Image (cartoon, rainbow, N blue to C red; front, side, top):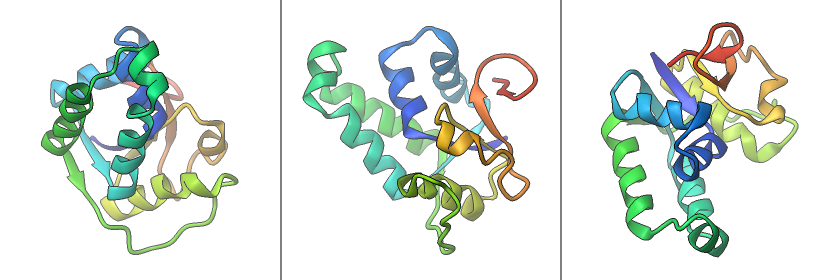
Length: 139
């Protein structure tokens, strides 16, 4: 399965290994799906995890960020969106929709209500991360 995963899910998975977001990261490590990502998505993940709050409160180290980026590169496909989208009520989240279209994603995984409200987007389901059926990503 080809999926776009929003930065919030990846950040949450990096600081909390347990639970639904941690399961998404474990499934990515196991190669159970291909993550579709753009440069702007990767930059957001790096920027958020590099904040001093994450370094101090969650003990995120530079090598943790490097490991995540390397995992995304290993198990993912970098796309360069050609189609600009403006469907999301939060304009900064349009990058996920654009990447999904550019990469032929079969789903978008997000916990962000600004994206979830669009389910489905151009026949692409938008699911919350969870290891169960229904409107959740099954990993």
